[in-house]
Image 1 (tube, helix red, strand yellow):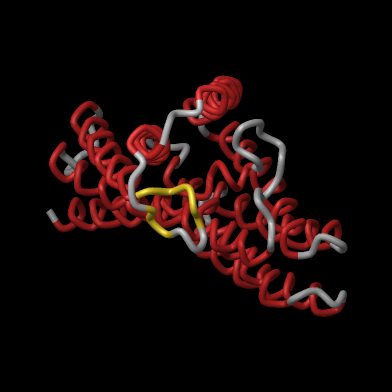
Image 2: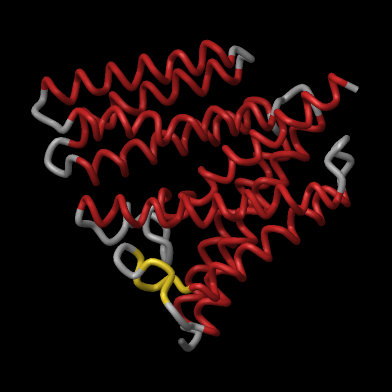
Length: 272
């Protein structure tokens, strides 16, 4: 499969515009990073609502968006238990709203949990009071972006057997392997370069591999969801990528994997 130069150029231009905002907000942390996640939550809620209920998406966007914002703000305040409870309550409330409007209840309920869980964990990972939070957030972005970019480039250049043609006809095994290797290298590099406590380069590589696998899984899962809803892209806000959900689908799963890794490291440090 030949590399599509025009497509790659459009993707690169979009990334050139969007990446600095994400990087600066991540560096600043605190309210800036939370504001970024809140804005992303609103956009993701709108895209999910448009996909799952294209004729009645506005009200559903408000219901899902309110649940996500409440949980993110609770996480920003350091109340993780409250944030998780708000996610559950928000999912239930969104489901009730959907049912009252003749919208599929399960889609609304699942949308809150699918979008909200990684948003809350991303706030927890950044942790505005610790420099370690910056390091862990940098790691998750580095792994997810490296895996995503290399999977696309290797798959486009090498081609070969399809990974899951039923739901994602363009993804190949060569791209999948390239993405895993890229994530592993990125994880090892970040852990070796940054002071991340017990997470050395070796274990960073292991975590990077797991997070890269999660990134690939998140990408495939969103492809399956889009096929279920009968849409090609989740949205059209980002040229070359489609919607925001199309851009962060793998990142959402990678956040969960890296957050689990951070929990393990914290337990090891407390037990030392």
